[in-house]
Length: 613
Image 1 (cartoon, rainbow, N blue to C red):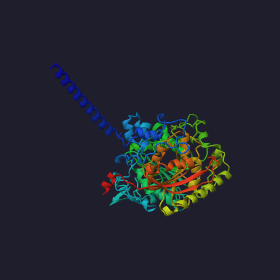
Image 2 (spheres, helix red, strand yellow):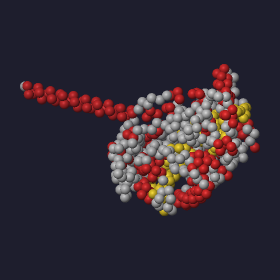
Image 3 (cartoon, one colour):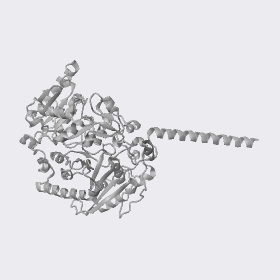
Image 4 (spheres, helix red, strand yellow):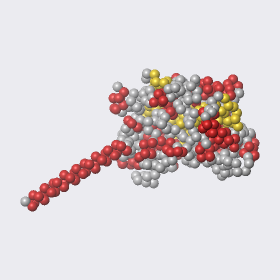
């Protein structure tokens, strides 16, 4: 009897243990579902073996290249897992779910939660982002300026919320953009002409004979202001955060309008000093007086000598007590910054920045805001805190009484004034322009069988150097996001001096854009660069796939072994080679380069196919 009771007790304990184990496993499963860390979302242990995560010594052989040696690239997957469908719009470094999950302590009052916060290595998504159900190849430019497929960005809340402002209207399978905005209900075109008229520009043309070329639109909405500036040969960096209106920039890029995700928070915007001729804020709901005017001083850093700030907001015209108080305080601040009112009419005021440092030196001692310290580099922008100080001009700008730039389009090929900052001669600059003109012609010959005149619109040069790739495309109906790598000389200021736009970025991290927003990525020595930083080439491939539209193209120009490495992953990425070429030796690389042009296939998950039927 005693032995039977002992066996019964053992069985009972075994059953209890099994039940406890089931409960624990069930709890872990529920937690993983809630936190979003299921197997198809985060890199598994096996994936990490070939992905060589940045910052993790695990599975990384320091004695060998991250791209492999002598063609040995280690384990190559036949396919990558597909992310859950709910991640079809994932922006890894601007993912609010990540912020909540890892409980970052951020100051919401200064917009820290809208700034970049990238996942740790173990939380990176090593899966391919699926398109949404019913996804279609985007409508081509210029028709796309005014309409996009609703299935590609299935968000209509802005159409309802801004219905009285003509931002966007849902019409059947499409979303239509009438060109309206919060302060220009009757269309961006008329609003832009009124600004030019206020400034007495010839023929009410905002480009002012080519003197206005680069514009920053802060809090851009769906970027209709920038869209309508394009017809005047003015290119705009339309900027908005991934906030409650989180699809604004996604709509802008789907329309084929230059745009980037960003916020005026605590960090400098990723653009060099003196990049823009004009900055614009139309009811952008930014508190310009906060923190001793630090946000307005950031705009001051970015404006060229004689640059304009166009401000359309109730504070400029309303007569209630609070608006009048803000207007008085803002007027006093800009006066101490040496800005002057260039024009004021109806709902809009336009300030102009001084041409020289004279006004700064004439201020009374102790006047706030102070001038920035001489050791402060106004062109250092990657993860650099804003400072509540005025950025004075260089001696060259002060003597020249302006930026010294040629009008557009001559400035595209004229030697930029800041070229000397890098020790480049005019001959070196002209040679670079000629070399890339030929290279781009060669690219288009290889692409010829696969593209038509309107196939490409949104392009990115992932390592832009001085912008000659983009300059060579001046006769194409495209725009280029020129990316200057973080950590090196900030040549982006040369790019802006040429009348082009771009940003600074570290390719060891995800780029601040939505999935499926670029038609072509140009990667010149990008893989070699991240190899030197000991980052993962596979992570970069997955990130490029996220950015690229289905049926879009990648041009890789790099060392032969780099190109061969990339080709081993084509099947797993659903990419295919459409052209290859040998390239002349590049002196900077010290060895022959090879060119491969790749196209991303259109694919869908079984779930998205089912939902679209």
